[in-house]
Picture 1 (cartoon, rainbow, N blue to C red):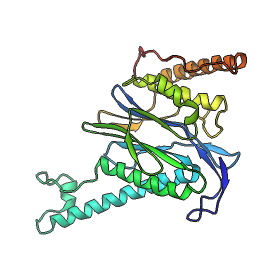
Picture 2 (cartoon, helix red, strand yellow):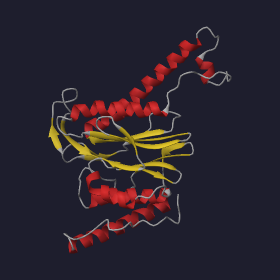
Picture 3 (tube, rainbow, N blue to C red):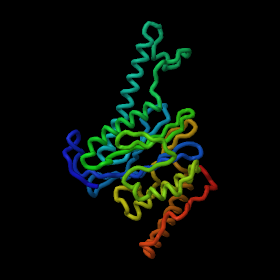
Picture 4 (cartoon, rainbow, N blue to C red):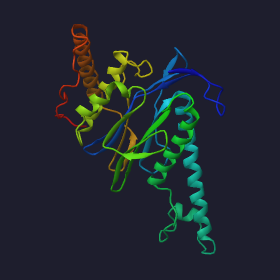
Length: 293
């Protein structure tokens, strides 16, 4: 969707598009977010960048948001500011609690004092609440133009809390085993539901996510979704105290890209032969990987 408005605070700027297809899944060793990288700069111009962010140092969380381009960009800037503000507030509260004890927060943070537990901390659940609040706040500025201008996916992996949350434009949070958000979701929702299996190997999740994004892009269902030529989507994982953008080994990357392209080529042939009768989701197509990553 392309629309015109008045600029931030009074609107959302001009020639702003809806964008993105981000998928979240639970895999056999953790959680993964998989996102396309195409960002529209106007009606016909675009570039590629990562859309999934982790703004909290030493806390295993990440978020990907989808919606109007300007809102999504604003979210990624403001969530970092919001998190750092909350962390500063927590630090000040701890400093006040230490007054008169002869201990400094710097010594505790540096490990020079080890027998003190600070009473306040910024936790993963606080990050989830901040994402929900910011999603709702920004979405409210776009509801003039669309009933659902923004949503987000959050993954959390702290201790026994290994959870994926979908947040709607009102800030409502729901825990889910898998989900997709963004303008490309309407074209792949049933396919994802049919082919996702609980705790799939990571390789299979990446294969499925890459296929769904390339399917939307290649068949031109949504021009706002896409990947850089020859590249995989952004892949962000949380597993066993690992929280990072995941770089898949080259041999697996090449294998996935080839399999995805072969499947899309077959679908395009069938669409030409049976445009009104083809059933793309009649049965799952992803067998369990023999080489889970």
